[in-house]
Image (cartoon, rainbow, N blue to C red; front, side):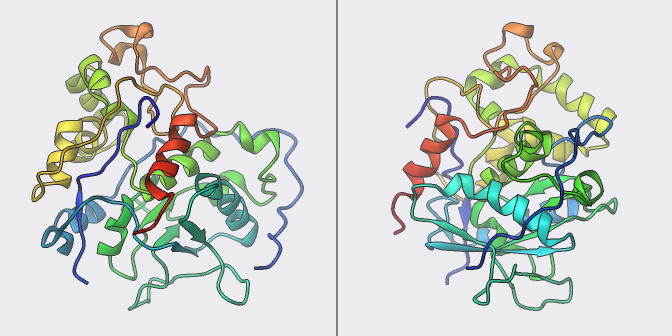
Length: 306
């Protein structure tokens, strides 16, 4: 397994039991801008509480990986050009493995879901909600998506419609490939495949000033204390996610500073400042492509489907 991979291989549960890609509009002449990137993983309290109390607590399973060769994805809001951009980016995760992400129905149309649904239209349900209760970029982790109601999103990209449209960049354009938005899509689909944060690695946890970082994000981003701990404190995360299983977390010897699952923090959050082993390798502070370690995670866990 590649250096630095932190797997969420303990966390869970479950109850027993093509047409051509739509073409985006003309490519913008400059990269989309926003005033300070929206932080990843601002999971709404209601979603967090639903997962924490989910039926998946009742029957422990080995881990969070999907056990089916096809995971269906559906959208609520947005446009086909935006769907094509997300699809092309997310599919980078599944190259060479057995699990595939399906974004279109049998007729070749992008799959949709509705807040009126009573049965799940897809395994991963993407929204673009910007209301206070659901705004942000976030995703449930692996098969925990099944524990949310059929009328709820399991992944959200709040602000993507306004930030990227109406003339969406092409998936292969330099504009998109260098963007924070692309990094967000890769990051959240990493969670959807069952991957935890890279800064949960013990070496990162030892170097992070957790109390200071958590307090800062609560103040500056409006996160609840629980949301901040869930995203920064590995002990809290794994305790919350695995109350009923004794399976250990799986770590590798070194951190992967190029992983899309690595957060970028101010140097002041690290005990070793700019020399931290957890400081992202990218000069921009966020990875815009899957690292070899990210790729190896997928291949190690999805080369075969039980």
